[in-house]
Image (cartoon, rainbow, N blue to C red; front, side):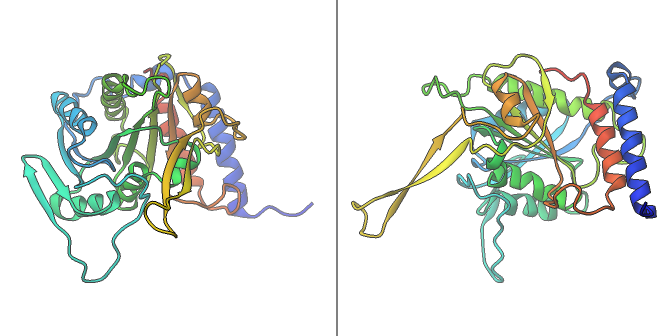
Length: 316
């Protein structure tokens, strides 16, 4: 039998310990962690890909302020949906950024540009405790996660070592006149999620593991359940490129189509959770390395297991 290296042994031991912890820990005990401590007032930066004037981010800012947090919006000046983690990387490029009203900044750039500007300028000298992006108009699940400006902005914050949450609301395909009836509930859940992170935070360290992002998707008709999910692979949102001869001979018009009933190959996927009415919480870290390809992430595995336990028992 081949000898197992030290790193491999540690990796396998960590998995064994994690499995034992997940199998035996009581969610009620986790929820009670730090219960006697007073609530912590967080400095939170909000961003999105729908623009700083979008009503969903304004509603979230109001709710977080009402909960006692300092919430500042630093978001794109215009709709930047689908920009992913894209940034303006042209040396010498000039853009405008201004505080349009107290606690609200407009940035002429991508969602990632907005977060970068906010961290380095608006919050210069002291990083925020948390970055929240959204609430996005439309779900960001499965393959769409790779292209979402909402998720891209959150990942950008994590790159700078600031924990982040991307929040999106499912589009109701049956009600085009009011496709987001659940926004008040999604806002309330986001505040509840922040409060859970604060209440269960370790005595030393941040709210979440370093470089971690929670991708939260809130269903149209919530069942009250919260699922800790994998990112699926179904193409829930697809782009179509339709010839547009009315514009020019070589022009194409982009059309987006929703395919909510596509089959999902991934087990315990975000797509499945949302279809069942559960809030989906997926943990992202911006690392596209395929799990199992290389060892060396034992600490991350244990940190992530700890966060999973802290979120156990959370309801919508």
